[in-house]
Amino acid sequence: MSSFAPTSANPGTSAATKYDADDAEFFPGIPKIPFKVDAGPSETLVFKQYNPTEVIMGRTIEEWLRFSVCFWHTFRGTGADPFGFPTLKRPWDDGSNSMANAKRRVRAAFEFFTKLGIKHWTFHDRDIAPEGNNLAETNKNLDEIVELVQQLQTKTGVKLLWATSNLFAHPRYMNGASTNPDAHVFACAAAQVKKCMEVAKKLNAENFVFWGGREGFHSLLNTDVRSELDHMAMFFKMALAYKKKIGFTGTLLIEPKPKEPTKHQYDYDAMTVIGFLKNYGLDKDFKLNIEPNHTTLAGHAYEHDVVLASAFGLLGSIDSNTGSPDLGWDTDQFPMDHKHASHVMKVVISQGGIEPGGLNFDCKVRRESTDLRDMFISHIGAMDTFAKGLKIAAKVIEDGVMAKCIKERYSSYKNGIGAKIAKGDASFEELEKYVMEHGEPEMRSGQQENFESILNFYM
Ligand code: XUL
Ligand code: CO
Image (tube, rainbow, N blue to C red; front, side, top):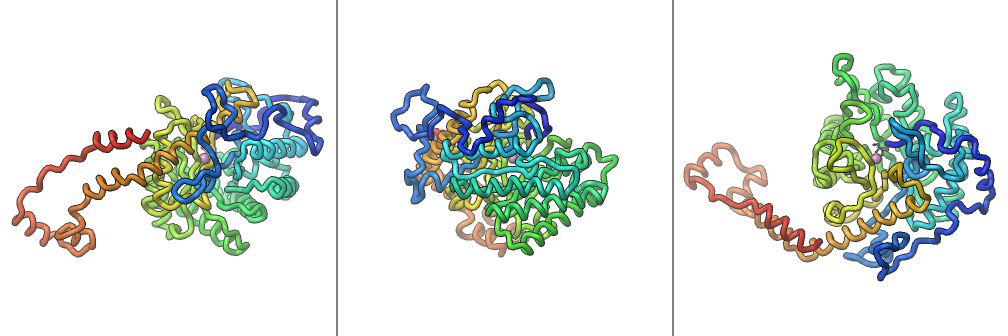
Protein backbone atom coordinates (compact mmCIF):
# COMPACT_ATOMS: atom_id res chain seq x y z
CA MET A 1 0.00 0.00 0.00
CA SER A 2 1.11 3.53 -0.22
CA SER A 3 0.03 7.10 -0.14
CA PHE A 4 -2.75 6.96 -2.68
CA ALA A 5 -4.33 10.04 -1.12
CA PRO A 6 -3.39 13.27 -2.87
CA THR A 7 -1.21 14.51 -0.01
CA SER A 8 1.15 17.24 -1.00
CA ALA A 9 4.88 16.93 -0.48
CA ASN A 10 5.80 20.24 -2.08
CA PRO A 11 2.74 22.48 -1.98
CA GLY A 12 3.02 25.21 -4.55
CA THR A 13 6.62 24.61 -5.65
CA SER A 14 7.06 26.71 -8.76
CA ALA A 15 10.52 25.13 -9.30
CA ALA A 16 8.64 22.17 -10.74
CA THR A 17 8.15 24.07 -14.01
CA LYS A 18 11.86 23.82 -14.81
CA TYR A 19 11.21 20.10 -15.30
CA ASP A 20 8.60 20.72 -17.98
CA ALA A 21 11.18 21.02 -20.77
CA ASP A 22 11.42 17.94 -22.97
CA ASP A 23 15.13 17.50 -22.25
CA ALA A 24 14.88 18.15 -18.47
CA GLU A 25 17.05 15.84 -16.35
CA PHE A 26 15.39 14.64 -13.15
CA PHE A 27 18.33 12.83 -11.57
CA PRO A 28 21.38 14.95 -12.44
CA GLY A 29 24.67 13.52 -11.22
CA ILE A 30 23.40 9.94 -11.28
CA PRO A 31 24.76 8.00 -14.28
CA LYS A 32 23.49 4.78 -15.80
CA ILE A 33 24.23 2.27 -13.05
CA PRO A 34 27.14 0.02 -14.04
CA PHE A 35 28.07 -3.52 -12.97
CA LYS A 36 31.41 -3.46 -11.13
CA VAL A 37 32.90 -6.76 -10.18
CA ASP A 38 35.44 -5.45 -7.64
CA ALA A 39 33.28 -2.76 -6.00
CA GLY A 40 33.92 -1.95 -2.36
CA PRO A 41 31.29 -2.02 0.39
CA SER A 42 30.50 1.69 0.29
CA GLU A 43 29.99 1.78 -3.49
CA THR A 44 26.21 1.50 -3.37
CA LEU A 45 25.46 3.06 -6.75
CA VAL A 46 26.89 0.10 -8.68
CA PHE A 47 25.73 -3.48 -9.19
CA LYS A 48 27.96 -6.03 -7.51
CA GLN A 49 25.93 -9.17 -8.32
CA TYR A 50 23.50 -8.14 -11.03
CA ASN A 51 25.41 -8.59 -14.26
CA PRO A 52 22.46 -8.64 -16.70
CA THR A 53 24.27 -10.46 -19.52
CA GLU A 54 25.84 -13.22 -17.41
CA VAL A 55 24.42 -16.61 -18.31
CA ILE A 56 23.10 -18.90 -15.55
CA MET A 57 21.60 -22.26 -16.45
CA GLY A 58 21.13 -21.33 -20.09
CA ARG A 59 19.58 -17.90 -19.64
CA THR A 60 20.91 -14.43 -18.91
CA ILE A 61 20.42 -13.05 -15.42
CA GLU A 62 18.20 -10.36 -16.93
CA GLU A 63 15.96 -12.99 -18.55
CA TRP A 64 15.59 -14.90 -15.28
CA LEU A 65 14.87 -11.89 -13.11
CA ARG A 66 12.58 -9.63 -15.21
CA PHE A 67 12.64 -6.81 -12.63
CA SER A 68 10.03 -4.11 -12.60
CA VAL A 69 9.67 -0.74 -10.83
CA CYS A 70 6.26 0.07 -9.37
CA PHE A 71 5.03 3.58 -10.06
CA TRP A 72 2.81 3.97 -7.00
CA HIS A 73 5.46 3.72 -4.31
CA THR A 74 8.43 5.06 -6.20
CA PHE A 75 6.74 8.01 -7.94
CA ARG A 76 3.61 8.62 -5.84
CA GLY A 77 4.88 7.76 -2.38
CA THR A 78 5.29 10.82 -0.21
CA GLY A 79 6.42 9.22 3.04
CA ALA A 80 3.20 10.32 4.77
CA ASP A 81 2.00 7.89 7.44
CA PRO A 82 -0.96 7.98 9.86
CA PHE A 83 1.20 9.97 12.28
CA GLY A 84 3.19 12.25 10.03
CA PHE A 85 3.21 14.46 6.99
CA PRO A 86 5.08 13.79 3.75
CA THR A 87 8.88 13.65 3.94
CA LEU A 88 9.81 12.57 0.41
CA LYS A 89 10.06 15.83 -1.49
CA ARG A 90 10.70 15.18 -5.16
CA PRO A 91 11.80 18.43 -6.81
CA TRP A 92 9.69 17.89 -9.95
CA ASP A 93 6.49 17.08 -8.01
CA ASP A 94 4.46 20.11 -6.84
CA GLY A 95 1.99 17.86 -5.04
CA SER A 96 -0.90 18.98 -7.23
CA ASN A 97 -3.37 16.85 -9.16
CA SER A 98 -2.61 18.71 -12.38
CA MET A 99 -1.96 16.98 -15.67
CA ALA A 100 1.37 18.84 -15.96
CA ASN A 101 2.48 17.31 -12.65
CA ALA A 102 1.31 13.85 -13.77
CA LYS A 103 3.41 14.20 -16.93
CA ARG A 104 6.50 15.27 -15.00
CA ARG A 105 6.20 12.21 -12.75
CA VAL A 106 5.97 9.90 -15.74
CA ARG A 107 8.96 11.50 -17.46
CA ALA A 108 11.00 11.30 -14.24
CA ALA A 109 10.03 7.63 -13.95
CA PHE A 110 11.31 6.72 -17.42
CA GLU A 111 14.63 8.44 -16.72
CA PHE A 112 14.83 6.42 -13.50
CA PHE A 113 14.06 3.10 -15.24
CA THR A 114 16.66 3.82 -17.91
CA LYS A 115 19.43 4.82 -15.52
CA LEU A 116 18.70 1.78 -13.37
CA GLY A 117 18.60 -0.53 -16.39
CA ILE A 118 15.24 -2.02 -15.37
CA LYS A 119 13.19 -3.10 -18.39
CA HIS A 120 9.69 -3.25 -16.89
CA TRP A 121 7.32 -1.13 -14.83
CA THR A 122 3.85 -1.40 -13.29
CA PHE A 123 1.12 1.10 -12.39
CA HIS A 124 -2.45 1.58 -11.16
CA ASP A 125 -4.66 3.61 -13.49
CA ARG A 126 -5.08 6.31 -10.86
CA ASP A 127 -1.34 6.59 -10.10
CA ILE A 128 -0.50 7.90 -13.52
CA ALA A 129 -3.47 10.20 -14.23
CA PRO A 130 -5.79 12.19 -11.96
CA GLU A 131 -9.51 11.47 -11.69
CA GLY A 132 -11.76 14.06 -13.35
CA ASN A 133 -15.26 15.13 -12.32
CA ASN A 134 -16.90 12.16 -14.02
CA LEU A 135 -15.94 8.91 -15.75
CA ALA A 136 -15.65 10.51 -19.21
CA GLU A 137 -13.28 13.19 -17.89
CA THR A 138 -11.24 10.63 -15.95
CA ASN A 139 -10.88 8.45 -19.05
CA LYS A 140 -9.82 11.49 -21.08
CA ASN A 141 -7.09 12.33 -18.54
CA LEU A 142 -5.89 8.74 -18.64
CA ASP A 143 -5.79 8.72 -22.45
CA GLU A 144 -3.65 11.88 -22.48
CA ILE A 145 -1.08 10.39 -20.08
CA VAL A 146 -1.14 7.03 -21.86
CA GLU A 147 -0.14 8.78 -25.06
CA LEU A 148 2.97 10.15 -23.32
CA VAL A 149 3.65 6.74 -21.78
CA GLN A 150 3.44 5.11 -25.18
CA GLN A 151 6.02 7.52 -26.58
CA LEU A 152 8.36 6.94 -23.64
CA GLN A 153 8.00 3.15 -23.79
CA THR A 154 8.89 3.23 -27.50
CA LYS A 155 11.82 5.60 -26.95
CA THR A 156 13.36 3.68 -24.02
CA GLY A 157 12.33 0.09 -24.76
CA VAL A 158 10.90 -0.20 -21.21
CA LYS A 159 7.86 -2.48 -21.17
CA LEU A 160 4.74 -2.69 -19.07
CA LEU A 161 4.85 -5.81 -16.86
CA TRP A 162 1.32 -5.18 -15.68
CA ALA A 163 -1.34 -2.58 -15.13
CA THR A 164 -4.04 -2.66 -12.48
CA SER A 165 -7.09 -0.65 -11.47
CA ASN A 166 -7.11 1.15 -8.16
CA LEU A 167 -10.47 -0.04 -6.82
CA PHE A 168 -9.83 0.88 -3.20
CA ALA A 169 -8.75 4.51 -2.71
CA HIS A 170 -11.82 6.44 -3.89
CA PRO A 171 -14.56 6.85 -1.23
CA ARG A 172 -17.08 5.13 -3.54
CA TYR A 173 -15.15 1.89 -2.90
CA MET A 174 -15.22 2.09 0.90
CA ASN A 175 -17.44 -1.03 1.11
CA GLY A 176 -15.58 -2.84 -1.64
CA ALA A 177 -15.65 -2.81 -5.45
CA SER A 178 -16.94 -6.08 -6.97
CA THR A 179 -18.05 -7.22 -3.49
CA ASN A 180 -19.85 -3.97 -2.69
CA PRO A 181 -23.44 -4.46 -1.51
CA ASP A 182 -24.41 -1.64 -3.91
CA ALA A 183 -24.62 -2.80 -7.54
CA HIS A 184 -24.01 0.77 -8.72
CA VAL A 185 -20.52 0.63 -7.19
CA PHE A 186 -19.96 -2.77 -8.84
CA ALA A 187 -20.79 -1.06 -12.15
CA CYS A 188 -18.25 1.73 -11.45
CA ALA A 189 -15.55 -0.88 -10.82
CA ALA A 190 -16.46 -2.72 -14.01
CA ALA A 191 -16.31 0.47 -16.07
CA GLN A 192 -12.93 1.31 -14.54
CA VAL A 193 -11.41 -2.12 -15.26
CA LYS A 194 -12.85 -2.05 -18.80
CA LYS A 195 -10.96 1.17 -19.52
CA CYS A 196 -7.79 0.02 -17.76
CA MET A 197 -7.76 -3.21 -19.77
CA GLU A 198 -8.03 -1.20 -22.99
CA VAL A 199 -5.06 0.87 -21.80
CA ALA A 200 -3.16 -2.30 -20.87
CA LYS A 201 -3.70 -3.64 -24.39
CA LYS A 202 -2.61 -0.36 -25.96
CA LEU A 203 0.59 -0.36 -23.91
CA ASN A 204 1.28 -4.07 -24.57
CA ALA A 205 1.03 -5.01 -20.90
CA GLU A 206 2.21 -8.58 -20.35
CA ASN A 207 -0.22 -9.15 -17.45
CA PHE A 208 -3.16 -7.51 -15.68
CA VAL A 209 -3.40 -7.63 -11.88
CA PHE A 210 -6.40 -7.67 -9.56
CA TRP A 211 -5.63 -6.88 -5.95
CA GLY A 212 -8.85 -6.90 -3.93
CA GLY A 213 -7.95 -4.06 -1.58
CA ARG A 214 -11.40 -3.76 -0.05
CA GLU A 215 -12.88 -7.06 -1.24
CA GLY A 216 -13.53 -8.41 2.23
CA PHE A 217 -15.25 -7.31 5.40
CA HIS A 218 -14.83 -5.63 8.75
CA SER A 219 -17.77 -7.46 10.30
CA LEU A 220 -19.64 -10.65 9.48
CA LEU A 221 -22.76 -9.16 11.07
CA ASN A 222 -23.50 -6.96 8.05
CA THR A 223 -22.00 -9.23 5.39
CA ASP A 224 -23.51 -11.86 3.09
CA VAL A 225 -20.24 -13.62 2.28
CA ARG A 226 -21.66 -16.05 -0.28
CA SER A 227 -23.26 -13.26 -2.33
CA GLU A 228 -20.09 -11.19 -2.20
CA LEU A 229 -17.92 -14.10 -3.39
CA ASP A 230 -20.42 -14.92 -6.16
CA HIS A 231 -20.34 -11.28 -7.28
CA MET A 232 -16.55 -11.22 -7.23
CA ALA A 233 -16.47 -14.34 -9.42
CA MET A 234 -18.99 -12.70 -11.79
CA PHE A 235 -16.70 -9.69 -12.01
CA PHE A 236 -13.72 -11.86 -12.96
CA LYS A 237 -15.84 -13.67 -15.57
CA MET A 238 -16.78 -10.34 -17.14
CA ALA A 239 -13.13 -9.23 -17.10
CA LEU A 240 -12.17 -12.47 -18.85
CA ALA A 241 -14.92 -12.04 -21.44
CA TYR A 242 -13.79 -8.47 -22.14
CA LYS A 243 -10.15 -9.51 -22.36
CA LYS A 244 -11.09 -12.04 -25.04
CA LYS A 245 -13.37 -9.59 -26.81
CA ILE A 246 -10.69 -6.91 -27.25
CA GLY A 247 -7.89 -9.40 -27.89
CA PHE A 248 -5.80 -8.48 -24.86
CA THR A 249 -3.26 -11.28 -24.51
CA GLY A 250 -1.78 -10.52 -21.06
CA THR A 251 -2.19 -13.02 -18.21
CA LEU A 252 -4.85 -12.16 -15.62
CA LEU A 253 -3.40 -12.34 -12.10
CA ILE A 254 -4.99 -12.23 -8.66
CA GLU A 255 -2.81 -10.96 -5.81
CA PRO A 256 -3.60 -12.56 -2.43
CA LYS A 257 -3.45 -10.61 0.82
CA PRO A 258 -5.08 -11.66 4.11
CA LYS A 259 -5.99 -8.26 5.57
CA GLU A 260 -5.29 -4.53 5.44
CA PRO A 261 -7.16 -2.38 4.67
CA THR A 262 -10.09 -4.69 5.51
CA LYS A 263 -10.03 -6.92 8.58
CA HIS A 264 -10.42 -9.95 6.33
CA GLN A 265 -9.75 -10.06 2.60
CA TYR A 266 -11.33 -12.81 0.53
CA ASP A 267 -8.09 -13.41 -1.41
CA TYR A 268 -6.49 -14.42 1.92
CA ASP A 269 -3.51 -16.41 0.64
CA ALA A 270 -2.44 -18.56 -2.31
CA MET A 271 -4.44 -21.66 -1.39
CA THR A 272 -7.56 -19.61 -0.69
CA VAL A 273 -7.35 -17.99 -4.12
CA ILE A 274 -6.62 -21.33 -5.80
CA GLY A 275 -9.71 -22.81 -4.08
CA PHE A 276 -11.79 -19.79 -5.19
CA LEU A 277 -10.59 -20.06 -8.80
CA LYS A 278 -11.29 -23.79 -8.93
CA ASN A 279 -14.70 -23.41 -7.30
CA TYR A 280 -15.82 -20.87 -9.90
CA GLY A 281 -14.11 -22.56 -12.88
CA LEU A 282 -11.61 -19.75 -13.36
CA ASP A 283 -8.35 -21.64 -12.74
CA LYS A 284 -7.53 -22.04 -16.45
CA ASP A 285 -7.71 -18.31 -17.08
CA PHE A 286 -6.18 -16.69 -14.00
CA LYS A 287 -2.87 -17.08 -12.21
CA LEU A 288 -1.47 -15.56 -9.03
CA ASN A 289 0.76 -12.58 -8.32
CA ILE A 290 2.41 -13.46 -5.02
CA GLU A 291 3.70 -10.76 -2.67
CA PRO A 292 5.86 -12.26 0.10
CA ASN A 293 5.03 -9.50 2.57
CA HIS A 294 1.36 -10.49 2.16
CA THR A 295 2.36 -14.12 2.68
CA THR A 296 4.06 -13.35 5.98
CA LEU A 297 1.06 -11.20 6.97
CA ALA A 298 -1.04 -14.38 6.51
CA GLY A 299 1.22 -16.09 9.05
CA HIS A 300 3.22 -18.15 6.56
CA ALA A 301 6.93 -18.40 5.81
CA TYR A 302 8.31 -15.86 3.31
CA GLU A 303 8.41 -18.28 0.35
CA HIS A 304 5.30 -20.29 1.29
CA ASP A 305 2.83 -18.86 -1.25
CA VAL A 306 5.43 -18.80 -4.03
CA VAL A 307 5.97 -22.52 -3.43
CA LEU A 308 2.23 -23.33 -3.18
CA ALA A 309 1.17 -21.31 -6.24
CA SER A 310 3.96 -22.86 -8.32
CA ALA A 311 3.09 -26.37 -7.12
CA PHE A 312 -0.34 -25.94 -8.74
CA GLY A 313 1.07 -24.36 -11.93
CA LEU A 314 -0.43 -20.99 -10.99
CA LEU A 315 2.55 -18.81 -10.10
CA GLY A 316 2.26 -15.97 -12.61
CA SER A 317 4.34 -13.15 -11.13
CA ILE A 318 5.89 -11.93 -7.89
CA ASP A 319 5.60 -8.61 -6.04
CA SER A 320 9.11 -8.88 -4.76
CA ASN A 321 9.28 -7.23 -1.35
CA THR A 322 9.63 -8.08 2.32
CA GLY A 323 8.23 -7.12 5.69
CA SER A 324 9.84 -6.87 9.09
CA PRO A 325 9.45 -10.25 10.81
CA ASP A 326 9.07 -8.43 14.13
CA LEU A 327 6.03 -6.49 12.89
CA GLY A 328 2.52 -7.60 11.98
CA TRP A 329 1.82 -5.34 9.02
CA ASP A 330 2.66 -4.69 5.40
CA THR A 331 5.81 -2.56 5.39
CA ASP A 332 6.66 -3.11 1.72
CA GLN A 333 10.41 -3.04 2.26
CA PHE A 334 13.00 -3.75 -0.40
CA PRO A 335 14.03 -7.44 -0.27
CA MET A 336 17.63 -7.62 0.97
CA ASP A 337 17.88 -11.17 2.32
CA HIS A 338 19.89 -13.66 0.26
CA LYS A 339 18.28 -16.73 1.76
CA HIS A 340 14.74 -15.48 1.04
CA ALA A 341 15.75 -14.59 -2.50
CA SER A 342 17.34 -17.99 -3.09
CA HIS A 343 14.17 -19.80 -1.90
CA VAL A 344 12.10 -17.80 -4.38
CA MET A 345 14.56 -18.23 -7.25
CA LYS A 346 14.76 -21.98 -6.65
CA VAL A 347 11.02 -22.12 -7.34
CA VAL A 348 11.30 -19.82 -10.36
CA ILE A 349 14.10 -21.92 -11.91
CA SER A 350 12.28 -25.16 -11.14
CA GLN A 351 9.14 -24.01 -12.96
CA GLY A 352 11.22 -22.90 -15.97
CA GLY A 353 11.08 -19.14 -15.39
CA ILE A 354 8.48 -16.54 -14.44
CA GLU A 355 7.83 -15.02 -17.90
CA PRO A 356 5.48 -13.31 -18.82
CA GLY A 357 5.50 -12.37 -15.13
CA GLY A 358 8.43 -10.80 -13.36
CA LEU A 359 9.81 -9.59 -10.06
CA ASN A 360 7.97 -6.33 -9.42
CA PHE A 361 9.39 -4.17 -6.64
CA ASP A 362 6.18 -3.36 -4.78
CA CYS A 363 8.44 -1.67 -2.25
CA LYS A 364 8.85 1.76 -0.78
CA VAL A 365 11.89 3.49 0.66
CA ARG A 366 11.45 4.32 4.34
CA ARG A 367 10.00 7.77 5.01
CA GLU A 368 13.35 8.64 6.55
CA SER A 369 15.24 7.72 3.32
CA THR A 370 14.70 11.14 1.84
CA ASP A 371 17.48 11.48 -0.77
CA LEU A 372 16.90 10.93 -4.48
CA ARG A 373 19.86 8.52 -4.43
CA ASP A 374 17.98 6.37 -1.90
CA MET A 375 15.51 5.57 -4.70
CA PHE A 376 18.40 4.07 -6.69
CA ILE A 377 20.26 2.43 -3.79
CA SER A 378 17.13 0.59 -2.65
CA HIS A 379 16.44 -0.88 -6.10
CA ILE A 380 20.11 -1.71 -6.75
CA GLY A 381 20.37 -3.47 -3.38
CA ALA A 382 17.27 -5.55 -4.09
CA MET A 383 18.40 -6.40 -7.63
CA ASP A 384 21.78 -7.53 -6.30
CA THR A 385 20.01 -9.60 -3.63
CA PHE A 386 17.97 -11.45 -6.24
CA ALA A 387 20.95 -11.89 -8.58
CA LYS A 388 22.79 -13.51 -5.68
CA GLY A 389 19.69 -15.56 -4.80
CA LEU A 390 19.51 -16.76 -8.41
CA LYS A 391 23.17 -17.86 -8.35
CA ILE A 392 22.69 -19.72 -5.05
CA ALA A 393 19.52 -21.41 -6.29
CA ALA A 394 21.20 -22.44 -9.55
CA LYS A 395 24.03 -24.09 -7.59
CA VAL A 396 21.57 -25.91 -5.31
CA ILE A 397 19.66 -27.21 -8.33
CA GLU A 398 22.73 -28.08 -10.43
CA ASP A 399 24.35 -30.01 -7.57
CA GLY A 400 21.12 -31.93 -7.03
CA VAL A 401 22.04 -32.92 -3.45
CA MET A 402 18.85 -31.55 -1.92
CA ALA A 403 16.68 -32.90 -4.71
CA LYS A 404 18.21 -36.34 -4.16
CA CYS A 405 17.41 -36.18 -0.43
CA ILE A 406 13.80 -35.21 -1.14
CA LYS A 407 13.45 -37.94 -3.77
CA GLU A 408 14.72 -40.48 -1.27
CA ARG A 409 12.26 -39.20 1.36
CA TYR A 410 9.28 -40.02 -0.91
CA SER A 411 10.76 -43.15 -2.51
CA SER A 412 8.20 -45.46 -0.87
CA TYR A 413 5.61 -44.16 -3.35
CA LYS A 414 7.64 -45.36 -6.34
CA ASN A 415 7.08 -49.13 -6.00
CA GLY A 416 4.70 -51.67 -4.53
CA ILE A 417 1.85 -50.45 -2.41
CA GLY A 418 3.10 -46.83 -2.53
CA ALA A 419 2.96 -46.73 -6.32
CA LYS A 420 -0.61 -48.09 -6.18
CA ILE A 421 -1.62 -45.32 -3.72
CA ALA A 422 -0.01 -42.64 -5.89
CA LYS A 423 -1.81 -43.89 -8.99
CA GLY A 424 -5.16 -44.01 -7.18
CA ASP A 425 -5.38 -47.78 -7.55
CA ALA A 426 -5.42 -48.67 -3.85
CA SER A 427 -8.42 -49.09 -1.52
CA PHE A 428 -8.88 -48.92 2.27
CA GLU A 429 -9.51 -52.69 2.36
CA GLU A 430 -6.27 -53.43 0.54
CA LEU A 431 -4.30 -51.06 2.79
CA GLU A 432 -5.77 -52.66 5.90
CA LYS A 433 -4.62 -56.05 4.59
CA TYR A 434 -1.15 -54.61 3.90
CA VAL A 435 -0.80 -53.38 7.50
CA MET A 436 -2.02 -56.71 8.86
CA GLU A 437 0.70 -58.44 6.88
CA HIS A 438 3.56 -55.93 7.33
CA GLY A 439 2.97 -54.62 10.82
CA GLU A 440 4.35 -51.23 11.99
CA PRO A 441 6.37 -48.96 9.64
CA GLU A 442 10.00 -48.21 10.49
CA MET A 443 10.78 -44.75 11.96
CA ARG A 444 12.22 -42.54 9.21
CA SER A 445 13.91 -39.27 10.16
CA GLY A 446 12.55 -36.07 8.63
CA GLN A 447 16.13 -34.73 8.67
CA GLN A 448 15.16 -31.06 8.84
CA GLU A 449 18.54 -30.02 10.26
CA ASN A 450 20.28 -32.02 7.56
CA PHE A 451 18.38 -30.08 4.87
CA GLU A 452 19.10 -26.77 6.62
CA SER A 453 22.80 -27.60 6.83
CA ILE A 454 22.96 -28.56 3.16
CA LEU A 455 21.29 -25.27 2.16
CA ASN A 456 23.68 -23.24 4.32
CA PHE A 457 26.60 -24.73 2.42
CA TYR A 458 25.50 -22.76 -0.65
CA MET A 459 24.86 -19.39 1.10
C1 XUL B 1 -1.20 -3.66 -1.66
C2 XUL B 1 -0.51 -4.09 -2.89
C3 XUL B 1 -0.95 -3.42 -4.13
C4 XUL B 1 -1.02 -4.30 -5.33
C5 XUL B 1 -1.56 -3.63 -6.57
O1 XUL B 1 -0.74 -4.24 -0.51
O2 XUL B 1 0.36 -4.92 -2.86
O3 XUL B 1 -0.13 -2.32 -4.35
O4 XUL B 1 0.22 -4.84 -5.66
O5 XUL B 1 -2.77 -3.01 -6.34
CO1 CO C 1 1.53 -5.85 -4.36
